[in-house]
Image 1 (cartoon, one colour):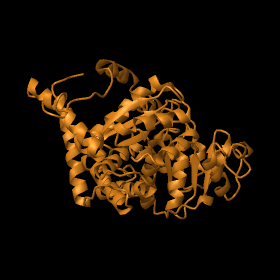
Image 2: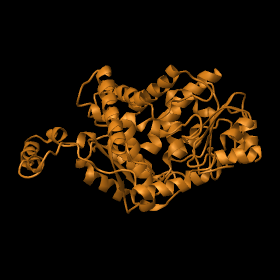
Image 3: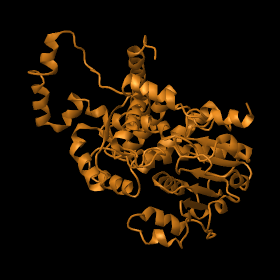
Image 4: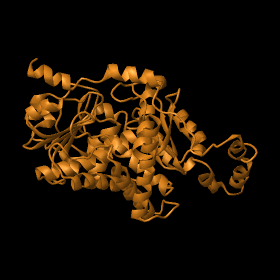
Length: 442
């Protein structure tokens, strides 16, 4: 077997095994009781006639819904299937395995009960109205795999007055993970956040949000060059100018970035760049090795398309990149929103936050970066593994504390109390999973 063949086999996806196991278990999540049922008499307490008592209590004081139901620990994972992973507009049924997977990660990594809701409409008004209607059952909303530009409008409308935290993971979760990974990568290459040049490959919901967060952290927008399927972003992009109402954020990138006015093909943007952040369509071979060769010394490449990165990690390394991250768990340096959302939602639920702000997300990024730094940074370890038990608790404590500082929390807990409570909840979720499948072999 040649070296190239060996490397290609490393990047093969476990499709056959995924099909076998999904069919074996008929999905990945289920609902289980959280109360004891010792006999028939218990149903009189948990259901009729006893259940009428908490119902009446909630009528008198609606806030008691958090005490008498699972609302405080339940979120909805909402998608219209219009932009699923790197697969595109595959619809609600085909998107359901991903939303179930999201719910699995929420429970196992964060102890959060998540309900997948795939909608049979891709109209923004329908998505917003549906979420508004189901909101009384949930303590938070996670928007997922909704195409731009409507994802921005849906998020903005739902954040304004729903009364529970709303988060678009493809935007905010991704940006938070990138921020943490970039902070640590720059420490390793001894470069300053305010002095680097960045090429952003793909300007969909993920990278638009990354751009917004990084510039708020001190990255000079003029030192960023974005590119989409039509080429580089610059002030002369008439196609985006003509659709400002739909692509307002993208047009702002055109106006405020790319100080040199570069035009043409993406390769132009890579010349001398310190960092490449790619969130485009599933690869490989979308980023050319010669482009990476043209980057500055000690280049950082984040190739994050799923399920296949824009360039294989070994190809980027061979081309001169020092630090490479992808969105996949089977390669070093997984840079994925799964590092963020379990702990972030754990934190906002534990303090009963009314919203999730950019400041809360940045607190999560600092906690994520600090967790990895405490373990020891290396070129192949800029972020921790998503399944580390204390990671979600560390992020939860940071986010919950920030929510309290901003006056957005209904409950007040110390940093240590938040950490210990989150750790206990995550530990219980994992123990329950292990107990359920302790003697099962697949």
